[in-house]
Length: 335
Length: 197
Image (cartoon, rainbow over all chains, first blue to last red; front, top):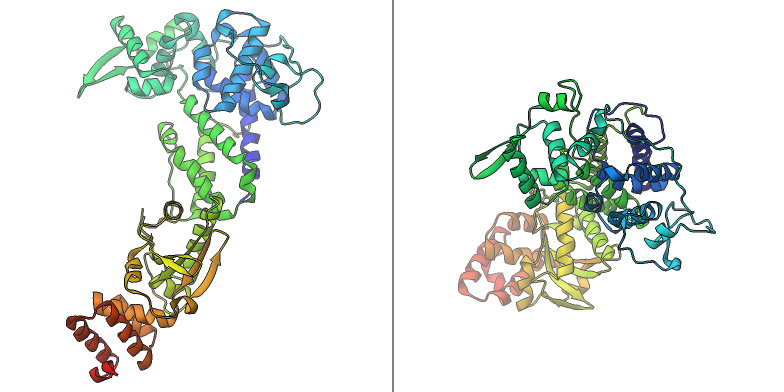
């Protein structure tokens, strides 16, 4: 059981995936295929900042894209997408760098400077860096000074992947744009506030308030079943027309927050060097810990998990689950 | 959890090695004394499936102490192994530990077979002679069935059965026990009179 090999295989599929997604969203790169889903920008940023530590050029172009399109992003949602301290410090670093480039109150960080000797190499390299980037250093990361390439563009609203940005321009960066994005794209006749909270990354209470307003405005419909308030999608043809799209040409939905979090958890797990020294049984047992801990997220994104009764089964299932998750996001499909 | 059985020397070794690895990973270490079907399997004295590993005692040096309840680290590691191998939660249990209350056959510790399962676990398997003692007691105390089958598979001599019978009466000196004991010995062709020899 070579965990590092498994990790390399995952990374090898995620980096092209990330390039392709961002290329369709305005980052300076060539898209090799057209995604049919609506992307969740903050979920993809949190994911990409981590994955791109293995691809510095993607990391730097992503930072340039964030700088160009900062007004379309939710700082609050960026923080919600973090699964652990690594994510938090990467987001902190990105926001600190943004604040340096474009001072704005909403970007002003609450980052405490980290002592230089504790800085961790951002790109995994130990080479000496003459002038570390100050903003990244403030969040504990060591990297050369980052200068924006200014090659990024605004998202093309005609692309399915960019529905979130179009809705944000229409409704503002906030909860209503996210609720409408999910309700318009998900293949479900109705949703409740809890599921919408999980899909949008907002608190259930705030989602409920937004849904009540949207319902009062007759933008969405609501009904009650067994005491549970349910919300039906708005008329897609009306919204397609409003958004300048062909009827039936609305993108599909993915629960990006959970999908990309699951992949990061898998990368964290497979990146533990100490696992390599363990016996095959302990590796499988650790893999089972991982899969058990991801059970609810996997269920939420519709990826089945079937754990057998032997360590060998667990290892096979881990590889199957990875394959299924990568298939859901379309990674490794000839890009 | 499913109810998967332990049906071979290899299966017993795999489980105990897994338990030892889990313990070592937690920087824990235990020596346990094991009796019953899994011990018979491990020592290749019988070949029948069992559902559990009966822990007679926690061993500290040459001292055997009660395994009830199992120490938390051992129970935790056993829980993980149960999950990983699809075993019932009580696959490692201190069921027979009350045997310690009235004493084990003399020389039990010296006769036991000592095996290591990594740095985290060592197991003392009750020897054939001691298994005869325990199985005879279990047959009389709990009824025939698997215990009698195991006892027959151990092919005890008359001397071994009589020694076991005398020891078992220290655990239950009642007339009722003696009557059932005599019946069991008769099953092995030993006359009642020999019990008093």
